[in-house]
Image (cartoon, rainbow, N blue to C red; front, side, top):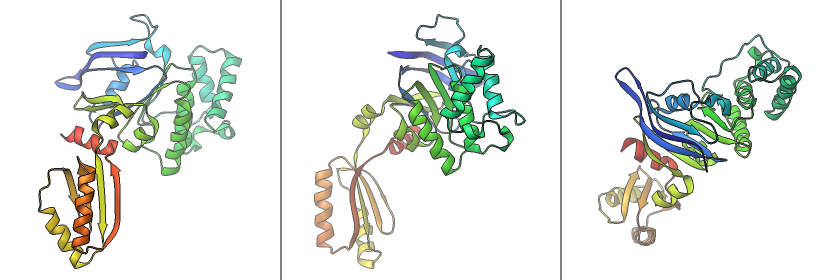
Length: 306
C-alpha cells in the first residue's frame, strides 16, 4: 500500500524546470532512495514533499490525509545541512521541537530524553550544540525529525558532510529507523542506497529515469562481469593489447588498463571458457580472475549519462 502518491509533480523557477512532471509512489514501511547527480532535482522534490516548496503543478497525496491538509503533520524532515541554535543544549532544542509539535511541558521533556537516548547522544544532552561534532549534529537532526513520530521520514543527503566514522554511525541508525517508519532519503552515494533501501528512484534533469524495487531492478538489468588481473610482464601486456582489438559478440562493455581487464558480458559461460583457453594458450601469468555482476552504480552511470 502506498503511503504517498505523487502524480505529475512539476516545479519551475523562472525559465528553469527543476522538476519535470515526475510520478511515483512510496510504499508504507519501505525505505526508498532518491538518486541522481547534483542538480537533478532531488532536493527540490523533497522540499515539495515536505511542504517547504509549493509545486508549480501536480499532486501529492498521503494515505488517510484529506486533500488540502497540512502534509507536514505526518512528515519528519532532516535537511542536508541542519541549522541549530548553538547556545542551546541538545535537550533544550528537542524540548522546543516537541513543544512546536504540540507536546506540553512534561511530555516534551520526556520525548526529548527518549530521543537523545534513541540516537545515542544522551550523554551530551546537556552540552551546548555549538560543541557537537558533525555526526552528533546529524543525530540531533534525526532526533528532531522523529519528535512527532512521523509516518514519513524524509532525509536530504543525510551523510554527505560527515567523516567516515560519523557516516557509519548515521547509516547504522538509519538501518534501525527503517524498521520503524517509512524512509525516503536522497543521496548520490550508490553504496548507501544498495545497503539500506528497498526501492530506488533515479532522477536525471528533473525527470524519473528509472524506478522500482532494488531486487527487481537487479533482476532486470544486472549482467555478469569478468575481472582479470595479470602480472605486469611484457607477455601479459602484449596479450591484453591484442585481445582488446578483437570483437566478440558476448561482450557488452569492456575496460582495460596496463594489467587489468573488466568485461561486462551477456554469456558468462562462453566468456569464461574462451578467456581461460586463451590465457592458457598464450601462457599469460594471471594474478586474479573473478566473476561478479554489475552494480547499482554501473546502472546509475548508464542511466544518468545515457
